[in-house]
Length: 164
Image 1 (tube, rainbow, N blue to C red):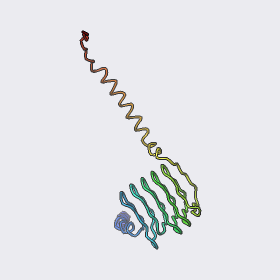
Image 2: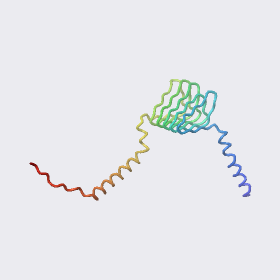
Image 3: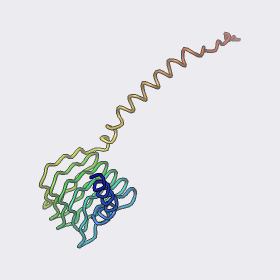
Image 4: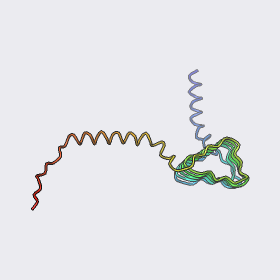
């Protein structure tokens, strides 16, 4: 039995890159992703870049600090998440799942369709929310260092000033 398990795991290990190459998923950091006309993509993940959909997307789309633009009469079958950017949907475009836009805006054409729920938190101040605990911790550390240094070093005594 262990030989079959070893052979199956070896086969799975060898086939994993082939399965990943066969999928139509796309990911990028810093470089824009474009789904061309008459092209279909799987899941899309983009950080510090923008996604332009001129074709169709079968999966989900996640964009961090970038924008998502969907052309007219094209669709995204899954969910959409945009953090720190804008969602632009033209007439006839549609999203099959939920849409979440945090620290950005959703510019939806009148005929754009979202089949799931919408969560839109406009304003760039939402980008600071994940860093709030870190800023609080930095403030406490600064206060401790300030109090310790104030007690450690005595202030210089200056002689009295004579006035003539």
